[in-house]
Length: 384
Image 1 (cartoon, helix red, strand yellow):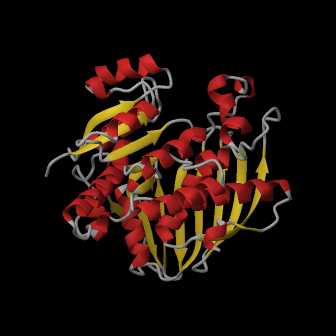
Image 2 (cartoon, rainbow, N blue to C red):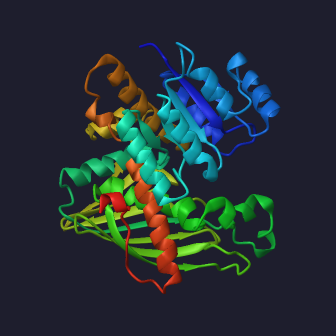
């Protein structure tokens, strides 16, 4: 199969997320890194892009990239937006409207209204707008979803999700520019920790259970009192399939490193998975012994088999999870080019609708936290 052409905005030298995207996009030789506007500093971005082999398709800013790429017969097939949060909407909107498929880092937008506009544009243009909830790319997360869907644990009663770390727990570090911006409303909006990490856990709950969050109640707190926005949140929620949800997210949990985990409890069994130990999925059937399902073992679901690359016992990490999002998108784009249906086992990439639901939850958590945890509708207006 001919490689698809891939471009990136943001993710420049020293970026935390850029290398994971470049590794993920190229891992299966489905995409060729062709174009990029990698830094807000024009010349630095051009120089870095050239060192990565982009040549004259290393651009000084995203506007130059859009202007040049839309005129080319060999334009990029997919653009990844990995810039600061406040720029996601403008860039994603512009590329969608000009005929490009987009993978946007989360959060997709800064407001619910912007999120609804992106959903409408994607639906109107027919272009793909995916959102990088990259942890849903893990093989055993996809197997977990398949097990729930086929009824292995019966009707889901309860889902418990966490994303807690302790890397912002030092009060003496609160004014460090690399930390402070994350709690600055001018740069991140109405929420800090929940918008940064909590929405990963909430999206994971919806992804695995196949249910959407309808309402929630939140207790939010700034444990370091100089912060305007929360560094810890506890969220109770209800889902449209009847499941009850509990979510804890924190950046002051000393001793926690990454801290993303999910547990799903049904009428006839329970499942448990942690991102720090992604090769094992724990399955407890009612009245039986605990089973440990290993990534790469025989007789897993097609969704898990498709997203496994190395043999059992060897670790697969975050870049490979990202790569599974890219393989989903490559299949979706190629199927469109070839005029066929895509492989259903690959039809799992997070959509603009997921990004919109997350933003509606962010605003509901922020408002509920200010109002002593009252229950609020967590759905965006267009989905009510």
